Length: 345
Image (cartoon, rainbow, N blue to C red; front, side, top):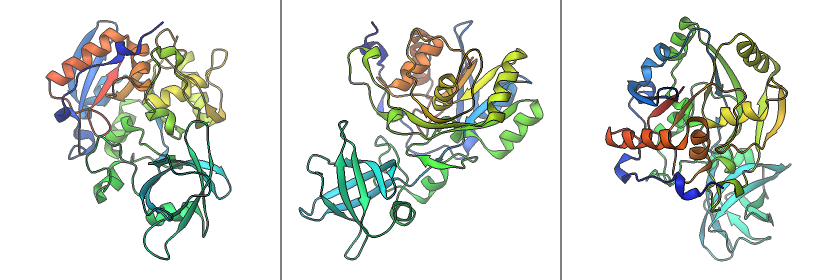
């Protein structure tokens, strides 16, 4: 049994990054060496020198959608926030509605002033999510016109994102839309850095995992193993699976950019190889898990008591991760989505 309390640490509020670094690759990078138990401070721009020629770097190219919409309960006049998660069927989406206690089936919501888009709560799931339908158009059109970047609540301006957030809370290689939180390890990359990686002989490949509620849902069970991690939509093209399998067969490292990429690759690992897939990743990684694909992990610093901190602890060992986080706090690293990164190898 693994107690959740073992995945806690102290972090001063001032260490939580409220804005991105002036340039994407201007953040810092903490190298965590598992074999030596050693820590090294670097700039993120040094990443090509820290990786090896022949490394197979895999990124998550999911695009963050403007998923957050402010609305009003037509009957009560209460302000509500709707976070659109993913389609349930044509014209209906799974959502999180806050406050949700009174958002019963049949509740109508108005977006903007008179004559604005209208929504209706169609159903309530057992996990508290709501199915919401639009009464006068499509939901993608609503998100394009009225949606905001879904910044996490620990960013003080999450209720009113800036124009900068629309660009910076998105990777430079984002393509298929579908995430409701950024795959934040990728936020540090620039095209120039990607070109330098290519010149170094590092292969770069992209899969897609649409970040959903599973990624940011806190663990509420005392035992880490008892937590249930909802599935997330994933696509691994045959060419990417083939490149990963070739790297492994040739003794080259597979470097995952982010916990989402790690989850996708490990979930697709069959009998000794990664299988192309188009479906859902439902793997939950916690200490005791034996990694079958990923050799190194590039990721940001994660919140206490979350499945993401549990995953990196499974990869590097809880003691080493907490040692690294203590070092990072003392050395002035910036934490969470807009913060600095770690390279665990």
